[in-house]
Image (cartoon, rainbow, N blue to C red; front, side):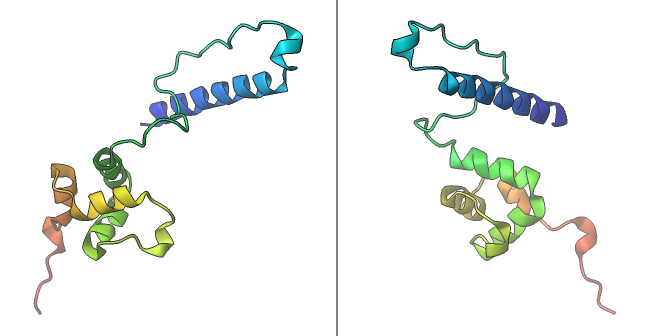
Length: 118
């Protein structure tokens, strides 16, 4: 996962650098035609503002895999606690009500977590 994160970060940095260069260049009419900036071989591109949001179930599963304890609490409470920051409302609803195997596994308690009566 660390390699993927680094690759995504590198691709983002390259895309931002290319965008800054395009914005800093003089007006296209005054400078003549320009070649588009080369696109780096990136594993994935950052979503553009016009692109639709990712699937809320996929986003919820990704969040549950990365932040298991938080996802368990969201699922038990049925809402996002304020201390967790921001998460898309669709993803919160998917975490709280989802029936996929990943989200249903949040309901299970670990084997050693049972209380012993003394």
